[in-house]
Amino acid sequence: MSSTANPEAGVIGPADARHAGLSTLLAALAASTILLLLSMPLAGVALAVVAVLAASFLFFDPLLYLAVFLLPLAPMVELESFPIHDWASFSRLLIFAGVFTRRLLDREPLGPWLWKGRFQKWMLLYVAVTVISAAVVNPLGGEAERSLMRLASYVLFYYAVTAWVKRPEQLRKIIMALLASTIAVCLPAFLQVASGSFGSWFHALYSNQSDEIPQWTGRVSSVFLGVNFLAGYLNMVLPLALAIQSLTEDTGLRVAARICFFLGVITLVLTQSRGAYIAFLAMLWVAFRTVLRSRRARLKFMPGFMLALIIGAAIAYAANQQVGDAGIAAPTTAERFTSLDEATLERLQIYGAAWEMFLGSPAMGIGYGNFRTHFNPMNGDSVSDFWDAHSLYLKVLSETGGVGFLCFFAMIGAVMVLAHKRWKGSVRGVERILALAVLGAVTTVLVQGLVESLTDLPQFGSLLWLLFALLMVAGGAGWPAPVLREQSDTGGPDRRMAQPAARFLQI
View 1 (cartoon, rainbow, N blue to C red):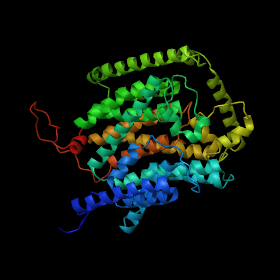
View 2 (cartoon, helix red, strand yellow):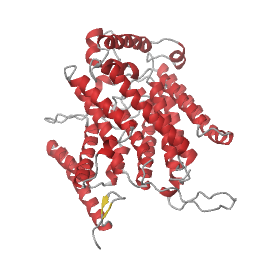
View 3 (tube, rainbow, N blue to C red):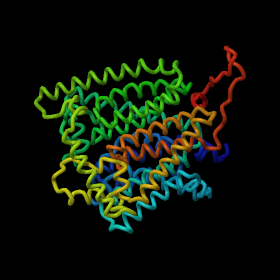
View 4 (cartoon, rainbow, N blue to C red):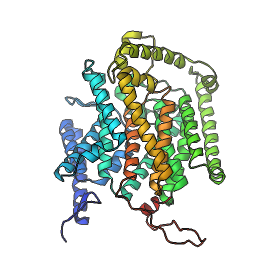
């Protein structure tokens, strides 16, 4: 059998024998890496870097699915003599490096891939502004370096996915990995409620960030360091799950989406995040204007949704009662939604400081990623737990000025316009699903962004740019149009297809 390359598959053939050999090689590399990490950390890191680069260069699909599944995990790992602690962001940079090298050696054109479309142009302009604001207009500091690395990892992961994913089954498996990952994220949250604490495993996961672990007050965070981080992440996945369970005929994806949505809603309620609740309601408004527009669709959706809300509310009430019985000082659910608690008053102080930063440098801001650096000297210890600017709008405005604000929201506007066009004009189910997912997810980002700023969080930013990439991939010119049988038994077009990936293309 000849060894020919298959451009559609994006892998190096012939296929079965070579693919099996590659799988064995990478498995051996992974095992060797684990052993070296236990004995010689730096040698293990070097081997891991080589393995990721090789797998991404060869378009070894399991690596991509694993990267998507592990998106919620981003602990800081410290190794002696190794300067990078954010391994999650570093791994996405490596994936892009492998993909980019492959494209160069295959002599594929870079212009259409990097610069085509309004969204990508605004995205690259925004990246340029962040670099200029952080390293040219202002002195480059440690916080800015960290934030720039994370932003670069989001954008380059976006490009890696758009270059890698060329077949329907790849897209299907990525989405399945994301749904499975979100289901897995919900389970530790339930464990936290059952144990009445974040859990010893949580403290072990963030052992080198123990000073940032909040007190347990009955609000779950799962594998995320902050409660609102989990809520924001769930708000971006739930629109995708809702779109899939409403539109696809792929049985496997539909079942996974229903489980993900049901457990995700329960977990979202358990976070007791006010901003996330309002953002979720805004997403539901989008859904009721699109996929849940008909009375039949709403009647089908509401029973499971209401059951999830009731279960979540009952568990949250029990968790709050447990906290009160333990004598832990924490505002009740009623107080959180009816009064100005300490966290709300602190945010007002943060907003004022952010606005002063913008007024001090209105064009290019104080430097991307520099909010904390400037905020601490301004306020000392008067605000004990601020995390960040607590407003997406004020963060962008204060750090990158009016120029960065324009570029960022022009980028967001461009992807929203594109998603709306795909929803209104596409005949492919996969495009409509991803269009609705992006419309819903970005809506939650914009609404929750009024009181939260989560884009600097590796899990949050990487998921947002992944959704952007999947939207672009779903609208690629090389995708097949749906193939329908002429008539079904009921006299209308039969949209059922044999293969899961083919059914996923259907409306």
